[in-house]
Each structure stands twice: as structure tokens, then as C-alpha cells.
Length: 260
Length: 288
Image (cartoon, rainbow over all chains, first blue to last red):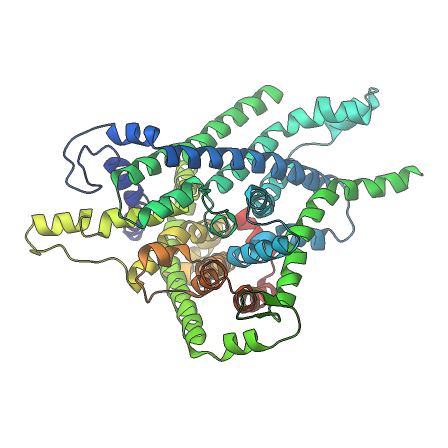
């Protein structure tokens, strides 16, 4: 009886979380002029218009490039740091960990302001470089948390076996450690990409005038009114940010199965 | 160099790029805005370096800022409470359900991957004048004219709850999942009713998760300015909106520095209290 009630409650909570998003996807296929109910028919016209909208395409390109660069830099820094924390006894490891997590302990608005003002004094104005710096520092803690959690499960004896069989430390790293770490590295990179691709709080502070990422483009379009185009853009983003990690997870499982 | 010395140096070589990034892109900038907050924006628009208390005097004494700060804390508190009320039973359901737990967890993680701006704006499709709810209301004849349900404090809280609920559920779940189920059975066998067993055994053991989720919801909620901009009315600004206004619109960077440090200080006190009693480890469990 109690369980029945809890289950009903949980289903309602799940509906609350997903219904609004489902409506966005549904309305993006609406044939009607306006981004609202009633649905007048099924159509892909808003996606076609998206593909012909220069501003949106530009924002998309900016977001993808920014996300990829962020992922590469952030994952490199994060994997190196995670290796140190998991593989070595670092004196003061607690302080180091807290420091590396600090960018998500500080409210993003404050992080955004501090970085913008400081780099401005150094002569780096609002620019793509500033955006990149901001996204790297903001995604780094997430990468470290994800990669560290996965690194713990890689056993050291395999590496030691390779070394005892005569492999150099470099050979061991590239032929043993890196392939074993690949799922963790991919997971970290995907995480960084998605967070960067979705970010708006810091991005609005850092972006130069005229440059838009997909979220800031949506934000700017919301100023007017909600158009079916926004819903279509939302659908594309959902497919990208939900589909990519799912694909990544499947890929990682495939890789780890082959490796193990 | 001896082998030991090289062993000892290696982790620092690996750590140095990340630590350099955090130092240059976070720690030094934070120290810098402390200094900046004592500078002055002159009438000509240039910043006057020096030690002026004007920004702090304005930020701390102006009723306008204080009211918005209090309002922000109020909104964050209500949001956190609603998240707890909605999140606890859901987390309990996931933790105790048999079979499809992985699927339920995956579903819970999905919102993390769906863009914040899209989840926020999705409510316009539901509650807007031409939204789904108004469609149903006019169609059934309950109202004749669509009513404006958006752009008030309630919709800001709604948007925040929608955004933050997964953080709450995940943290409570992590802590519930670590509790041995047989503890409840033991309590039952000793004569406790199911409800008593929950209240006296499970609930106290899951409080660390609830607290971690609560802290995350509060801090993230109190630091947002996008939700009030999208779902709030002109009078629903939160404290982070003031920071955004000062920095981006008025270009008064010294004042903006003081305001962001104020926000940081208020939230740091909360994190400090939390850390004092529960430690950061619980928070990391939920994040990782």
C-alpha cells in the first residue's frame, strides 16, 4: 500500500521532469506558424528553416569548435592530474583535490566575473580565447571527478607485469595504461564537451559582442517570443547532448569489453 | 637524481598543468576582484585604482541590494525545500525498487545532459499564454481568455526546481543505496512498524545525502540569473542578476566585484557550516 503510493509519486516526479522537454520536441514538429498548441500537422519545416538560418549555423559552429577545444584541453589536464592523484601518494592530496574541485565550489557567476575582470587587466578582452579559458576551468573539476572514479578500477599489476617483461615506462604507458584508460578519457572528454556545449551562465559574461553559442542564441531568440524554430533548435540540442553520451557509453562498454 | 626523488617529483609534474590552470584562472582572479572591489568607477568611465570603500558602502548599506539578497535566499530556501519534498520519495523509490534500477538511474541522469536553457524555456510552452495548459483550460471552457501564468516568482521557483531536482534525487539516492536493507528488517523484527523503522533507522542514515543535495540545490539556486531572466517578471531579479547588470550593462566593474564577493561570502558561509559538520566527502560522492 505504502509502496504503491511511493511509486505513483515517483512516476509523477519523473513526468514533471520529462513532460516539458517532451513538449519542446513535440512542438518542433508542429506545422503551425506559431510555436504553440494546437498541433496542426506533422512537419519538418522548422528543421529546414534552422538549416538555412545563418545566425544559428554560426552559433552551432562556434559551440562545436569551443566544445571540442575545451574537451581536448580539459581532458588532457584532467587525466594527468587524476593519474597523479590515483597512482601516487601525493603529500597534501586532500588540499590538492579541493583546489582542483574549487571551480565548481565557487558560484559560476563569481567565477565568470573574476576571470573576465582579471584577464581584461592582462589585456585579454572578451574573445574566443577568454571563452575557451572559462570553459576549460569550469569543466576541469567534472573531468577530474569522472576520470578519477574510473581510474581507481584499473589494476596496477598489469602495468607492473609489462615493466617486468622489459617494457620501458613510455612503452608501458602507451601500450598498456592508455588503452586501459581510454574509456575514462572518452567519458571525461564527452562530459567536458557536453558541459561546454550547454553552458550559458559563464558564456554570457565572456562572449564578445556578435559571437553567439547555441545556448546564448536561444536566449537571445527568447527575448522576442517563443518560435517553432527555438523548439526545433532545442530538439537538435537534446539529440546531440543526450545522444552523444549514450553513444559514448555504448562505445566505452564495447572498448572495455575488448580490452578486458 | 635518485630514484626516490624522481618518484616524488613525478606526481607534481602530472599535476602542474591543472594546478597552474586553477591558480591562474580562478585563484588569482578571485584575489584580483577583492582588490578591484576597492577601486572606483569615475564619472568619465575609467577605473581609479586605490583604496576606496565606496562600493562596499553602497553594496552593504543600500536597501535595494539587501532586499534582493534576502529575496534570493528566500527563493533558494523554498526551492531547496520543494526539491527535498519531491526528491526524497523518488530517490527512495529508485533505491528500493527491484530490477530496473539502472534504467531508472539513467532516466534520472538524462536531465543533466539536457541543456539548462532548454529545460527552462520549455515551461513557456506549458504555461505561456498560448501554451499547453491554457489550451486545455480554454478548450474545456474553464476560462474564456488565456491567463498569463508566467513571469512571476512562482514560475522562477518552478524553473529552479525543475533544474535542480536531479541533483537532490541523486544525492539522496547515493546515501540511501549505501544503507543495508536488512537494517529495516531488523527493526521490523524487533517490533517496529514499517513507518517507525523508516523514521528511526533509514531516514537518519540518509540525512547526509539529503544535506548534500540540499546544499547543492541552495548554492546553485542562489547563484543563478538565467532562470529569473527567462521565467521571471521585471521585479523578480535575484542577486546574480545584480552582478550581471553591474558588470555587463552598467560596466561598473568595481561595484560588480564587490557584489559578486558578497554573493560568494554568503554562500561560502553556508558551505563552511556544511563542511564543519558533514565534510566535503559526501558532496563528492554525489558528484562523482
